[in-house]
Length: 347
Ligand code: SAH
Image 1 (cartoon, helix red, strand yellow):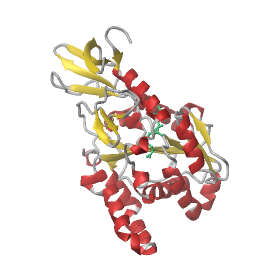
Image 2 (cartoon, helix red, strand yellow; image 1 turned 60 degrees about the vertical axis):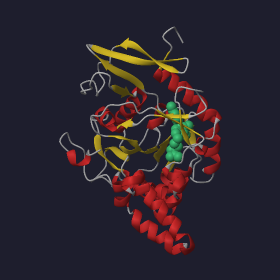
Image 3 (cartoon, helix red, strand yellow; image 1 turned 90 degrees about the vertical axis):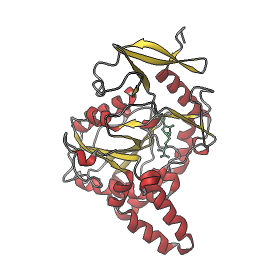
Image 4 (tube, helix red, strand yellow; image 1 turned 90 degrees about the horizontal axis):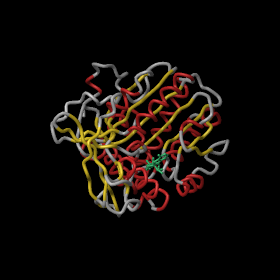
């Protein structure tokens, strides 16, 4: 840290690395796979269908970025084993996770879940060559953002010093997809370089070996601006700049910039999570589970509503798909994204 303090993204990277290494994130927030097994199962069905559309590659890399407790992948693999055993046998599980503690939790959750044991990676770069299907839920929102504030004739940037923001004159990254976004004076524009780099690396890889990726997160797909940095501690909103490492810091995902960064491959959506899960058969899976466990029918229905109802997680959470070498349409989307596909871009 110098006199100006620490750049916000450096502060956030340091805080989140300490947080995920030392705290139990799931004491502070609950994610879709932790709400219901239906979420991971529907994503598992998506993997099995896409694997078929890829020509049933054997082996293929089944990758998850930021697997948390491993719940999503455990639910997905249980479903795949049942409905598409050949896909299950072909899957080589690779998990991108930087927290040593969460790697241990994932190893326990996924023991015996695949024919070949899982491998862990710090980034996508070391995942072995070959066709790939990748899932990521609430991964991008944990990656560090910078905040630029519009002022007459230029930009300032937020640095953090003694638990408060300081404004420091800065230049906006010249090649960032959001560089031309109209932001009024005093307005904040966030950039998340690691999310763009992750997406670009995905696109480069998908151009070399066929595959598909599903990025699920809360965020916006409009040319929006605003301060979305937030902290959750003990399940409650907290000051993001105090006690780094004790709270989960996140920012809303800018799906518009992510899609622009991936434009060298096929981009699908983003669509609201509710619409995506409904297209994959949420109602049918919910009815099946209710029949199997009639005493829990109320809970099962409530969980489905929490995942998909617009006023819950159904609208604000969004799903973006990337693909290359997939026959037909990627399941769950109303069609491929094009520059004028405004139907898929509502916020
Ligand atoms: N996908 C899970 C967990 C979301 S929490 C779920 O839906 O429940 C975010 C996850 O991303 C955690 O596993 C965290 O350790 C991991 N993570 C955060 N930053 C990361 C980074 N830079 N590289 C790899 N993993 C990261």
